[in-house]
Amino acid sequence: MVELTQLPAWQTLWEHFVEAKQLHMRDLFASDPQRAERYALEVGGLFLDYSKNRITDSTLRGLMALAREAGLPARIKAMFRGDKINSTEQRAVLHVALRNRTNSPIMVDGEDVMPKVNSVLERMGKFAHAVRSGEWLGYTNQPITDIVNIGIGGSDLGPLMVCRALKPFAHPRLNMHFVSNVDGAQLKETLKKVHSETTLFVVESKTFTTQETLTNALTARDWFVHRARDEKAVAKHFVAVSTNQKAVADFGIDPSNMFEFWDWVGGRYSLWSAIGLPIMLYLGEENFTELLNGAHIMDQHFSNAPFEQNMPVLLAMIGIWYINFYGGGSHVITPYDQYLHHFPAFIQQLDMESNGKQTTLAGKAVEVETAPIIWGETGINGQHAFFQLLHQGTHISPIDLIASLTNCSSLPGHHEILLANVFAQAEAFMRGKTEQEARAELTQQGWQGEALEALVPHKVFNGNRPSNMLLMDLLNPRNLGSLIALYEHKIFVQGVIWQINSFDQWGVELGKQLAKTIQAELLGQPLSPEHDSSTRHLIELYRQANQRGCT
Ligand code: F6P
Image (cartoon, rainbow, N blue to C red):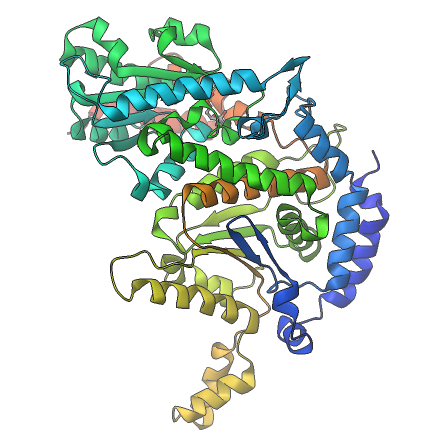
């Protein structure tokens, strides 16, 4: 494999960058009245306006050439075909199979995975129907009113984000709770809100070895058995989702209450699998299917559309332009939609755990920056918090602005304010305010002389700050499915360009290993001589504090 920095398109892009970095988007818009129209794209229910980026036709040509030279067409085919592209774990990467609505065969180790996928979906559907209809009864013969999902990372963030995003579609009897943190506060506060007789616990863990999840699940089980006074009642109130049947059985959950998935589903890509069970319970089978349909629309688009009109490829390559050429190592996600409150955190795991890598597939150190730092918050709140930095700070942080067009709020006036703000922010980021404009505005307000001149520099906005506008008609299951799949594929494309494996996560291991030793030391075992002086001191502080107790 030719190294990224040796590819001809990479060199050409650097030559182009020397000129391109002088351009201002204001001028690009002024010189091309068709720019907004030309740099826009619609896929399913998603509309992308990428015109407010520091790009020209030459930039896009160069970026698409780079995608081709980096072997993207073959890598896309390999993923959809079920090749073991997760090379460090020798696994296929097939979240696309989970939403393969055409059911065309996808082979892993000589076996078509689609029958397994469909059979688990069917079991999930039956179970969800039983719970939602009130047919599934708790140990005192009452229907379920509360579902507590216990899981962390990919076994939490996806279901959490989707359930919160699609709350208006939820079953009116069901309340959905999520417990991920091993800090007992989260479980304690959740258990205060639910009753053992009407609560279903869904324990989700791909490996079923994750300490946080197993600790929370054990505590929840004890809490439950203490109230039900009958071990057998657990079967009505605990189900598990995992790839590890043995560990589920060892934990004490009847394997008939287990929903399986497979090692070719990455944790952060797993909401489409049985990990989506809480989504199906809360929103119903039909809405879950719509979520899958939406993702499938994006999958088909991604695998078939020419790169120049391919939404994930465009977003990914424009991202590469900023990360690797402008040196902008941060990317902001701002939904202008309260229901998408958890979307930035979900994308943060998806992107940073996938592409936060420093070693290429060939085992060499990468020569370029990889994953950006993903952060964000609902847009309107962000405006009153961190947008100052985005407008006048010294970083380049491209921003994705996400909103729904149709006003579905029963509260008059709110949606217009929301949408006016998202459009205004994109315009402000692009256009900025020149010194001349700032001076004219202040003069009109009555400022003059020294006071005027002192204030002018502070009122200048350079503009030329990139943003992508992603719009949906409505935030519904289908559009959300497409939106999530869009980001999944964008991240995959960037991983291909950087020649890294986006589907392992060895970087999370070291901390886990060290925590095991330290946990024993907190409980009184002698300190390991291998600790540095800072870690030893921290452990001592813990011991002293716990001798004093909580009073
Ligand atoms: O530690 C990171 C991680 O392995 C994530 O990749 C994963 O989503 C999360 O932990 C939870 O893992 P599991 O589903 O196996 O409990």
